Length: 314
Length: 314
Image (tube, rainbow over all chains, first blue to last red; front, side, top):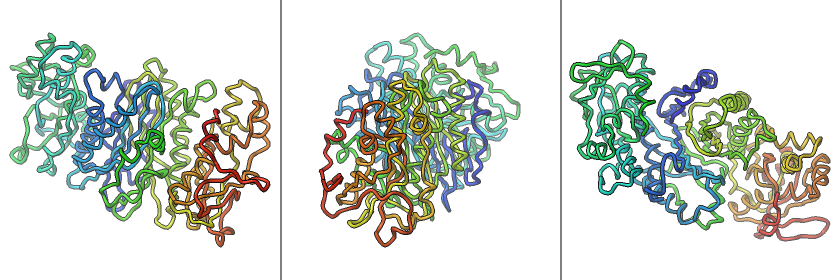
């Protein structure tokens, strides 16, 4: 769920206002909204794939497109500490799209859905010039497991559940039509939600977010919502040799992919020092009282700047 | 919520399967899905507007587009006997779309949202070649108010809450660039969900659906889900003189607009004879044991055929 683009337009405050309904515990500004429904907490999110922007049939099979559509939403529910339960599927279909392709997309969605034990309970189909797949997902969260972006505290360590940069490396390998590099290609075309990696220790997590836009961007979101700063230890970021090789093959830096790329769908969370031994993952930084997100490497600390993103054209 | 197009492709049975989760009370095949969340029943739906297909900035203001996006979803929740509570907004924005237009679309959504006392609690923004607005809506339904398409019984009367055909008449007036005809134009560009018309007597309603595709199509949906047939008394269908005048101006039949047009967003429901005095609306037909939907006028009964829709090119 991403409305942060409204920030770019300077619209978010003018457009959205605080929910009036007291059952809305979390509205705009997290991976999913959280509402109270009777004695349950529900996490609700939506995410969209647009052909040409989020996938290309040049490297994705229709089934992989369907799987990706489900996984990215499961990832959002997982980033709240929740379990996915229901999905609705809205499709905008170009008139010349073959029925067989639609069927395979659904097959992928169902396979991922079955894997995560969620039911597809409805949706909508309409026509348009471009294939658009919009998924709405509803999950349940136990109160004690709820992980909000806003709950990071100064002194927390920042942990990531797995290696970063591979998906963006894969995309660039595809775009440059290079052979081999199968690890990063696979990471790009079959992203997987990582909620099971954090399930055993959700109650020890303070803040959490999924990595859809690169580590730097996600840590920044946590800091903005938690009113903190952070230092990212760039030398500690887990990056596979396969990702470094792929980056090198297209003359880019793997670290840039990890920091500013995206779609790794690993989870980034913060945890108090005393609970460090309760969680698993890679320690990549810490939350600070002082505002601003800094990159730290070999004794040098540099402020993360907007330039970092803008100059990074994947 | 419309997945009936999958029927056209012959896909619905192959793609969708019965939900495994026992909390899914109603899945595919109604205006909204119904799930149990603790001690509550939630109605969940999604509907999409595509520029050029569902609206055109030639006759819609951006604010009216935003309002329409909310109203059509409120209409779906209302057709289940529910009350809307929360909405998520997914936008696909062409790169050259002005910020001011986005802001006005949101303004319209908020105005309609405020009117129906629902909160916009999240969403997603991405880029594409065509403006797409997808709304997900969640409402609550009291068990005794739940109105399913499948609950019509032979002998039930079919009631519609208001006049039909006006929206399609308005669309055609716009397309032909005719002046005046303000009633039908207004009906087209500012559709309104009619849930308040049925609120006082929801518990007496058996089956219900909203008129997004014309009366014939909606009665057919009720019959398919309820395993019944129906007779529509075409002379009883409420059609305003303004709609007849507009249809005449573009050399079309107002009755065709009412039967096969769409987007009137009135509600069609069925009710047992003994409860007829408890409800308000226009009696336009009855549910029969014998399958097939028939049109009845001046002693003549004709079977509704697929031709009816196909030959009707609005």
